[in-house]
Image (cartoon, rainbow, N blue to C red):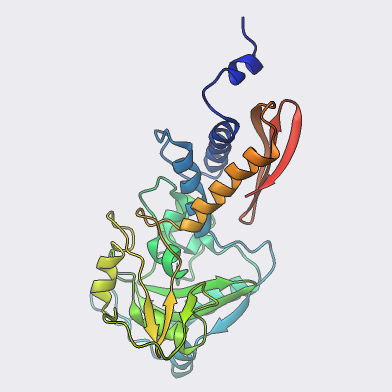
Length: 318
């Protein structure tokens, strides 16, 4: 009877294919432990790993250490004037004091290093490839529900939903607060004003936009500033359909957001997977057989694990 080693050696999988399949299984175990839903019917390990990395982007990790809080000039004025002009779904004006109290609670939570993920979208618990946060992937913008009600689990997140959101992004050890807005309609999360706020505050490159051209080269023939057109180009916030990679112009300089694949996931996640495959092919000799992934650890978004091959251990970071 052939041994496990002989079965692996005779398999049509090469080491990189096998390692990727084992990594996908380790990631599924991790998601199951964290109560994150995923599509177990996905047979391609590349897609499964990509979905895991996409979900990982949705989480804001603190390590118990607080964030510095940066507030845009536009939001600072709203806070100082105590004026937001937000109405709920029934058209009722939401008291400014209620919004301010919730904002202070959320900001203080970030400052104190508390886990604020339970105020985010409930889709942080979905990694099935169908609930992709295209706004986050392209523009690096998170949104968080402003509520003073507590939630510390997936099941209790219904109680702290709100009709108004804080739009922000994370860079290094800082939270950059852009604006407080009424909760957009479904698939209407791309708002050009958020780009303008980032530009006016000098934050576009901090948010991951690449500046590819300075002045003196003419202008774009088409400038995308209309929210409806933007949402159509990006296929909506989570809407199925192809996603376009766009270029934006401010003061005759061009900026490119994070590039997306056709599904709306970041292409840098694809590059991370390809780098892992390259690691296996170049670091592990062909006469050794990858047979296990052990000690998988996702420490605040920094993924590391051991690749076992013919009794040898290769430490890898993704």
